[in-house]
Length: 484
Image (cartoon, rainbow, N blue to C red; front, side, top):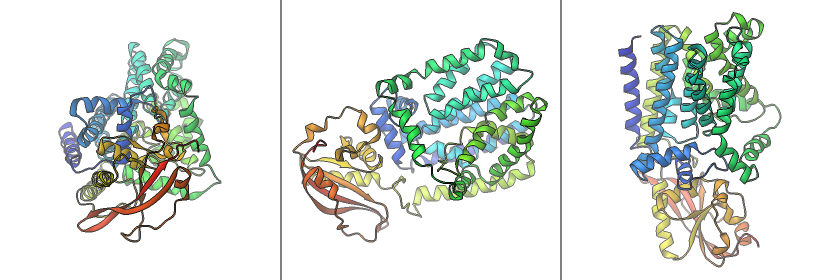
């Protein structure tokens, strides 16, 4: 494959993704992280701050629009593809580097990052830059790039805590690489590590000021999900990664892992240093998360950073005859994705959907007009609150109204005592509903915080005359506050 062919494929598929953006509605994650950007902070309860800074910058340029949020994801992910190709070009000096570039850029992984806001969007960008600058520092012996590597690793950590694996991979490589182990006797790897720590200061400072709440949440949340050994979680991880990578890449990465797994332990010094460099940032996390999946649910995005180095490894060895099958899978799934986004053929039985949030907000405001001076709240994790806040452009409350922890909603300084005596409108999503009628369900917990409540007519989100989403609505009177 030559540069011209690679560019045609990559430009083409990215233009398709760009064309998706006007049709792709606001995902709950988009809205929640936009809420971050409207409350700038050193860090946040459930994630580091980089995703907030990213959205804040793009909103300054493009305003508070759904397109601005999606365009931020698209542009940063485009940067990830370019950083990946630059790294691949240094390691693969033949035309295979173009194959590797196409393999990454045509995956559903890149498509998902291009249209949905998550901390993984800036994480993969800075992860790719970290590997690139480390490569230049080590293999091209340009010492200034140790500084850039430390900065990039710090910014990766400011994107997501997974970036702790970057210095781990660096020192793993140096320890087992006979040719480059001498760097351990110099100041440079440690300088990079120190710079990384310095650039993680916002996250550390926020945690110190907030009793290490974020670190505790990330560790305790994972620990609470650990149960006995189960095959279901492992199979779930296989399924999500199969979708993200597409079959050829998914199988190929396992082949690469098995090819080198034994060799890196038995004869590490016989492995090409550049290959060993890639392995150090791929195999430990790759194996580690699959092993963890027998004990807990490993989210589909946790493995994403490993594919930056893993796909370069795979690109070195892939037989070009398999590329046509990869293209066929990529085209087929992207067509399905396009049809679903534009026409919403298969309604999503979950709040993790892009459809209907703007209509929900409009109908909620109509209900509020009937009950002036009422505040609005929801009690799911973050989704309904974030979406209503984005589209209504007013203060919407979370489940902290009912005395529960509400993620970062609990850290923006709301004085709930000011709401005492006020009435409220409670919006409750019913993800799976048998009909369009009132639910008739009793919610005793509401009486712990309000004098009374009355179920109103539900808010229905329709598509071609058919109800695809349902939100129950309750009018709650005389808020007692969270101290009752």
